[in-house]
Amino acid sequence: MNVVERVEVVLPGTVEPEELELRRGPVPAPGPGQVVVRMEATGVSFAEQQMRRGRYYDQPPFPFVPGYDLVGTVQAAGPGVEPGLVGTRVAALTKTGGWASHVVLDAADVVEVPAGVGAAEAETAVVNGITAWQMLHRKARVRPGHTVLVHGANGGVGSLLVQLALAAGARVIGTASPRHHDALRAQGVTPIDYRTENIPARVRTLAPGGVDAVFDHVGGRSVTDSWGLLARGGTLVSYGSAATRDDTGSKQWPVLKLLGRVWMWNALPNGRHAYFFNVWAGKALSKNRFRARLRTDLTQVFTALQRGEISPAVAAVLPLADIADALRLAESGTVSGKVVLVP
Image 1 (cartoon, rainbow, N blue to C red):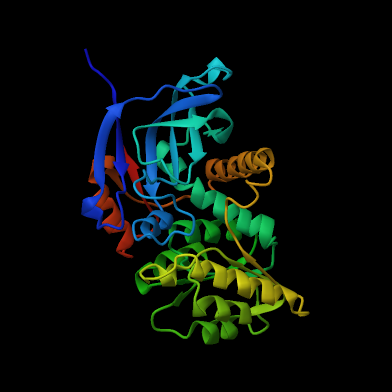
Image 2 (spheres, one colour; image 1 turned 135 degrees about the vertical axis):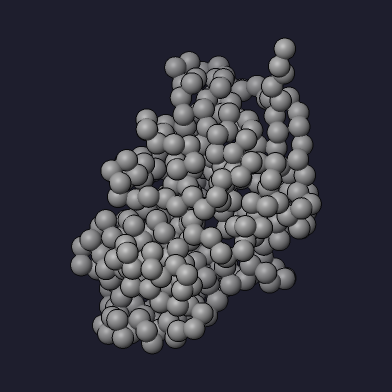
């Protein structure tokens, strides 16, 4: 008789990738309103890269199981959950806990994955897709004819931002290392080498009147330069501080500094707008509204995936047990797209 057990990856502290721990135990049972999802795909996001350094803004205390999102099949449903949900492939935004073979979730937090969409493909479109969709359509409100600048155009979020912006009829300028330029040009993107080119000068040459939106995950000096590149009426969406990933000191300070700049810029009477985007914003105020918006937007992302408007890049697929190799690869800066983990 085969006994099914739960396997999870535990982050014990600020450690090197090889020091993450693989633990085994019984599969948990769902409580009222909950489901047990058998994970089929989870991934390595930039958030986990920050978490292992203790640099993510509101990460839980060590030790904990990382994993920002997942795709899997509902294996069991607790009291109060529609029994027909069992056997359904779903996606969920978790923030933590996704790096496990079996995950207990509130049934209200799972979104059905459309038929014909593979687990790894769907996984790359969960947190990255929601982030890209909401920044593009809910914050910047990009329309046909707009010109946008996407930093990290080859990355997990950046590559989806590029594709969704192009689908919306926008002209796209994207920063990336030279190895990704041919692929970006093939999509219709004007690439900029962020390592050797003067990004502000190059963008001003390409868009003398400024750009309508900038999506900046870099932070630091980059976000200030990005603000200066906006046309009147333009929008800056800052959604990270990659430049401070390897810094020491307070993990809150880079975010608080960004928030201060955003507040100051929005107080200026120049017709431009700035946001610091966090996909979890609003959940504390209204969980039901947050869930409804997440369901609506993720459904839009999956629809775009089905239509072929976006094609999320899977950089590599590795077993959960090979988490050290997966993290090293994701942090290397040599891949395009997302590193996906499977059981």
